[in-house]
Image (cartoon, rainbow, N blue to C red; front, side, top):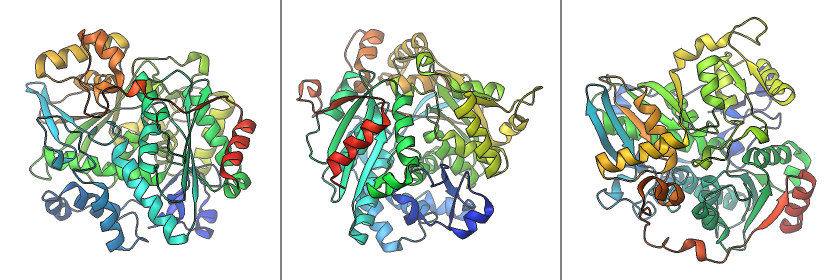
Length: 491
């Protein structure tokens, strides 16, 4: 299995074939693009039949071995078995078995269709990011030990990525984590989860700005190839291919749990800001998983919804980015979207590069086919199964109340966005699976507003906001950021 950059010419790709281990510790390709397989491995009906009987860890091994062909099978099997255990994913609700790792719950089953919630928040930080990040931590430690090397992870978070990365990497040999977050823009619980960590290899940096400023700093540092090499910079953001492919596993798990035969299809609705989670669903579909529709659910920051309705990709300026009650999706520049656009334009790397240069120079591009547009590829979106929708603060309050009243469970704000949009796209005969984002306790301010009572907290998180916090506040200045990294790595 070889990997190519979304911006690489065929000649440069041929000269520099990359395998899984070559791109594992990095983020952006040297040309500024994102990695994808040169071709997607295909899954057969016989494999799907056999996989119905597997545990989550066994399924993860079977899928990942199609992508990580340069890691010995025995090592990969050990890594997935160590990652996906009930002991790691122990925060299941009382009426769910933690052995299922990602259990399904049917919410509605009527004339409009079946609505299903897939639990993804049973990991250490109570968010879906744990599903991939725990594996990344083990993969990183494995790769670094094999080469007697070290790694400085530089990433950005709008809420859940940071804590998931830090919990996965804390205490890992040879790894430091420098995590950027927008200052005073996360929930109190999310902030405390990150900033209360006292491990010496964890560095939290609160950036004066919005999440897109943090993301731009990560890209700027990654594009300085000399600094990146000298400081041994890697990333755990969703631009990292290993993290995206680890998320592919739960799409297969959700499909296999919701169906009884391979001639059945399901759809997925995914709360989405950075396009990483739903990109994994796109990859699963390209591998042959019988997915009908992939529905992107946005909040008021509706860049992705606008594209999937109109063909216009229009990045918002920081002043135009809303601070919402589903803050992990307060994103106006979806960094993983380039992976899909590359597919949409026929894997034309030069065209992909040109379109994203226009994002930098003009704030977006237009593929609607209208006079003066940049192309007409929007007409081909339907064949990839994408739809979208938008949710507001009032929508999520109403959805949280509805789900609590009708089903007796409390959902988080992002999952509420997903359920609201999913209901707009349900079809009879095709189960609609909504991917849960996090436990409601992480966004208690809005739960209190919606329900008039606090969200239940798992054991060990009862008083997290009162713990001592360790972080620094910095402006969105790449020069100062590089100096801070260099000072604390000693390289």
